[in-house]
Image 1: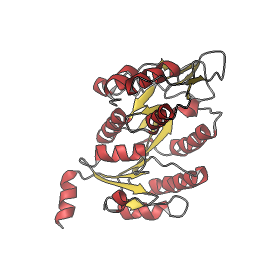
Image 2: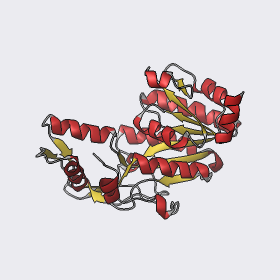
Image 3: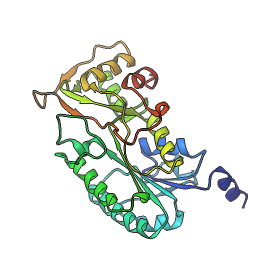
Image 4: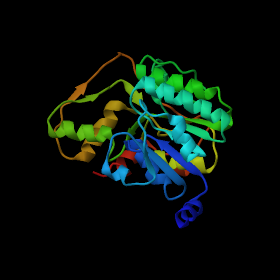
Length: 282
């Protein structure tokens, strides 16, 4: 009884993070758990999640998402699922059916890759999606399901490359440095970036203010992929890494998501230089 009271005092909103054991999902959980009654899912057994009563086992390929939703009855679902594309599509189809019948909203973490077939400009919220990659096409398929819902029930969060001290990208770069393996850089690719700290704060703000619609959650400015990675490597330490320069085109191409209409408050925006200077403490 006292447990339930404590949860209600913490915040009456119930938030369920699908993929709560992954890098991004777990960062979101840590940001939200002190403010809302927050639950997460994990797939493969890990003691830290098994022992946490706020985490539930959920295997996309075997378990029914609707049973989980009916058990938790969330006000907000955050989808940070990874894994089988077919299983992701089916899980989101079932979620959409659940959303039509229940008072609940879905925050879907999408990707800048929904625009990877366009290369001449950065992309904005209302731009038409088109992708050449299977990953981008998966995200578009799920986005299109959500766009058929009433706006009050969904938020699409398009995210560029995510960095951060414990991010898979930084871990891979460190591994390549230690093993003296080449680090791939794309000299002609213009990107924006984000990190787990700022992204989770932005998601917290959107939930807290009941924001809905399409949001582009990347740095407010652009940088060449090669320049960014080289600066990141300098922060990691004094090494002489091998850089493998990959040219996919002779022209500059863009893979960047910038906001035009759904602007966040200034204190929640970030520059790529801030990510390097303050958020990659190594």
